[in-house]
Length: 405
Image 1: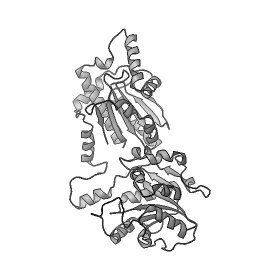
Image 2 (image 1 turned 180 degrees about the horizontal axis):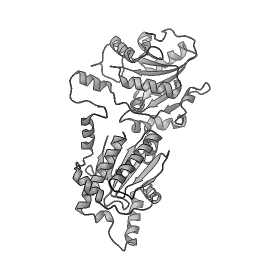
Image 3 (image 1 turned 45 degrees about the vertical axis):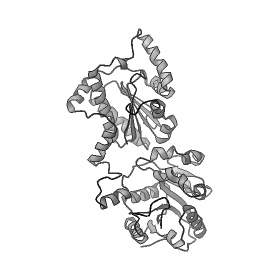
Image 4 (image 1 turned 45 degrees about the horizontal axis):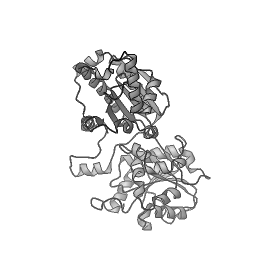
C-alpha cells in the first residue's frame, strides 16, 4: 500500500492530515476523511498514526504496528493513506510534526483535520497556539462535543480567523496564511474507538452506541426524567385545547430579553385579563397530562431527526408565554429545516392546529410556538451566543431542569 515518503518530496498538493491513535481505526475515521476530501477539495488525506498520545493512558494502547495496520485497513491507498511519519521522525507533539511537514514537503499545503472533541481539548496540548499558527485546520462534528467546542476558548479566541460555512475550499488558498479554520457541518458518526474496545472486552457499559440502538434511546429518555406516555394519553393530548399565545415576534423578543422582562410581560398580561392569575398557575392536573404528552411528542420528533444537546426547561410560574421550553441544536440549515417541518407535521397530526414558526428557511434560530411549549432550534454558534438555558435555568433547582444528550 502506498504511503507518504519519509524524506519528503517537492510535489504541489493539498493534503489533509487526520492525526490520532487509531486504537483501533473505524468507520468514523473513514467518514471524516471522505467528508473532508469533498468539502475542502483535497488531493489526499493522511491518516497520521501517533506513536503515543501524551494525553491518553498507556494502558490499553495497542502496539504501534497494530494500530498502523488498523489505519491501513480503512485507507484506500490512493487518496486516503495511512502513514507513520511521527514514528519515523521520533516526534511526539503536533507542533514538531507540523514543522517537519512544512520543511520536508515545501510545496504541499496542509490542513489539520480534527473532530469537535479535539477542538475542545486543544488548550491542553503542548504549545497549542503554535499549532494553530502553523497550519489551517478544519473541525468536523462529534456527538456530544460540537456545541461545547464551538463555544470554547479556541473558537472564541480565533473567531476572527473562522471562514464562513460552505467556503472550505478557500481554506488552502495560496495567499491565505494561518490562523484560519472552518467548521464543516454534516452528519455525526457515532463510532467510537473506546466503544469498540469495550465490546471486544465484553463490557456492557459503552460510552457511545449507534443512534438506532434501542438502549441508547431509552437512556436518553430516562435522563430527561419525564414519564412515559401511553398511547391513550397521547390521544387525550390530541384532543386538548392549546391556549392562544402572543405573536411569534413578540414571543421571541420576550425569550431573548430574559426572565425579568418576561415577568414584567406576565404582569402586564394579567392586568389586561382583568387581574387574573397567569394561565400556567391555573392549569389543572388533567392539563398537565396533556402537557407531558405534548413534550414527549416534541422530544421524540427531535430525537428522530438526530437533534443535538436536547434540553427541556420548566417555566411554570416564571413566564406567561409558555409553561415549558425545549432547546435543541442542528448542525446545518437542512437539518434545522427538517426538524421544524417534521415537528410541525407531527403536532398538526395530533390536533395542535395553532402552530407558529418563525425564522425559516436558513436562519440560525428557528422558533416553533406550540402554545404551552415553545421550541428553539439553534445552530451551535447562535445557541452559544443567546445561551437561553443559562438565562432561564440559572436559578432552577436540579429537579426543575432536565437535559437530554
